[in-house]
Image 1 (cartoon, helix red, strand yellow):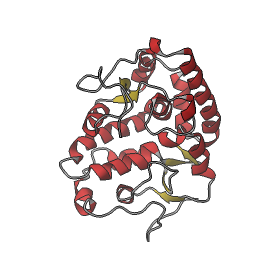
Image 2 (spheres, one colour; image 1 turned 45 degrees about the vertical axis):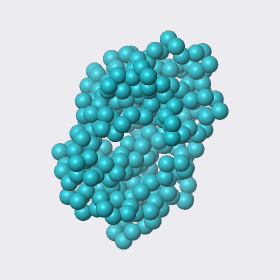
Image 3 (cartoon, helix red, strand yellow; image 1 turned 180 degrees about the horizontal axis):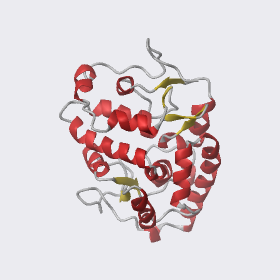
Length: 271
């Protein structure tokens, strides 16, 4: 797949200037439409921590300026966002996370892509991911994930580590009292999946188990058939911070992944 972004101006770390002044009025208007639509959904289906972060960032109805966001983020958790042209290599992505830098794509989708986008754009990356970087525990988990990523390549564990990211950071669910709420960016930036992941009877929702997650395949171009549910961000941090994943990689990396939607003996289902 040919990547969409302009990589000609990227540095060796894949960083680029946001060039906020180059966004057009139509692009700011499209951002506002996306933002307004998703805001109504996440108020109902989003994790409370996400909503707190969204409010803390003071996102307006236009595309955010990264330098303004960073003044807020660095004061809260020591993170910053950096501009990138689009998808970047895994090891460089891990390196940024390990230094508390979150890469955000600088281009915005077109109006024709309101409901479906092949690559992540600035709306997915910023609206979906950045609010939770305001939460200290989730912010620490993200840094720990970056550190783990740098170790995974030598252990043959990159695919398994990617599954962890997919089923938590992108498509994770969390308990909020007696209800399930979404915290994954892939859910919260998607109008359809925000509602589907909570209300649909079709997907399987399984209590989080680290090895189960790291051994489960996923879909990249359809709604998920499996979601994993955490009790808290403390649970994620506990399982990732300083954890040596090498024994898990050694035991499972050569095996085919479990099919999405399959229920296995020992799975604890969430309702």
